[in-house]
Amino acid sequence: MSAARSCPSVAEQILSWCAQTPDAPAVVQDSHCWTYRELERVAVSLAARLEQAGVQPGQVVAVTARRSFSLVAAWMAVLLRRCVLLPLDSSLTPAMRESMIAQSGAQFDLIIGGVDVAVRSDASVARLSEVLQAPATDLTVPPPPGPDEPAYVLFTSGSAGTPKAILGRHRSLAALLPWLRSTLKITPADRIPHLAEVGRDMALLEVLLPLSSGASLCLPPPGRLAPADALPWLARAEATVLHAVPTVARAWLRAAPDGIRLPKLRSVQFSGEPLMDTLISRWRHQIDYRGEVVNHYGPTETTLIRCWHPVTSLTPGAQPLGRALPGSEVWVEQSVGVRAPVGTVGEIVIRTIHGTSGYLGADAETASQFTFEPEGEVTYRTGDLGAVDENGLIHFHGRLDDQVTVHGVRFHLHGVKAALEAQPEVEQAAVTTAPGLNGRPPRLTAHVVLTPDRSQVPRKLRAALLDHLPSAAVPGRFVVVEALPNSTTNAAGNTDDQGEAGTLGTSLDPRGTQPAGHRCKDILG
Image (cartoon, rainbow, N blue to C red):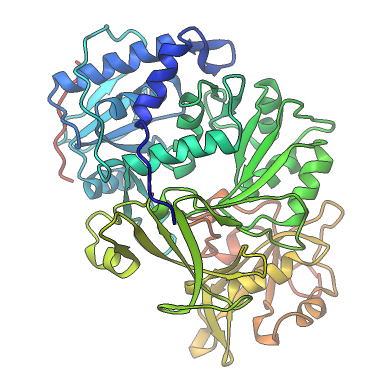
């Protein structure tokens, strides 16, 4: 594994483009546009106001906002001040928002863009309805951040319990952006959309990659972007490089108007869930896409992306996760410290010089999953199951914690999901469990999205599954749904199948018959 090389901070990378191309479009939303000069003016002014209010480098600043010009300026201002960014989605419940602020230790709470969120009565909150008119003020630019200095706090999805706060590092994030810029051949001519939920790890890359590359960041219209509107908007925005979660991309395709095309799109990266060959084929066929397709993988705990796989030829079923990025190593262990032979399933382990600092306020969990080495390398036990093939590619095989036992047979829910999605009539599937009654084994329910030509579960589905699974692993109940919820994706990039079985759609049987006390200064007046 190669040693880390120093590179400019994220803020420095953005400011370099503000100097090189001040009149180029930086942020666009429909007919509205900020140039790099305008972005710098607003961000520097806001950073100066943070400084004047006593916000010090290294302090956590919570930013609650919708996708907007104001959000972009606020994130840049926090990084310019060398503070720690805590991005919070405006749709969070008050209890969840307060919990995240308390866990992160945020000293300042910045609410911008006219967002109306509930706050505790004993907390003073910094509000700014609009940063566009912020007065120009001189900023004392702090020295560059140190190698392990924190840059951001992101939370896991909480699919396995309470969401955990992950402390990301300036150096790791700053090193990832130039690698992506080079690998994806990003230029100032590119237009990159920001569609991920605020607070998700991919939102950081969607916002920071274009701005650190001199490209244009494209914001969708205010409000929720319905699946039927997503592809038409991407076409109007002339998006060239796109990230999507497979579940979301499927929803876009199912709702898209006939004949939709994305003529400017040249690269699409998928992550967050297993990427199936059927989705790639449908993506290419339905929108006549002929550009690059990439599958990438990386838990939030390891700075967003650690494996990369350009899909040049389709692998039946799920596509490989790929190979490790420079400065990282990825392998599979069949037991702690014992690497698995080729083709043997075990736990995926990641070692990287571009790691995070672990979980905030969870020392025991950090110690059990992270190893911090003297030279700066961080090793993380992912809890994901995988195998290495004869070509050195990592393949995903589910989660250690999705193992269940039914009638004495132990199996992983991911294997059941994979068997379902291998059936020609099934486009997508999720498998949930419910406790058995009176001490009986857990009950399995399959939630399936069928191909457009199907409305009922095929009568031969159970028999087909028995060709691949033990009878104990075949679900006893099938539910047809139009689409799986977007919330099924957790922070590690896996499907969280813990939803309530009866709430997702129409039930069918296997025969196809319908049955902190934080304190924040008022810094913005």
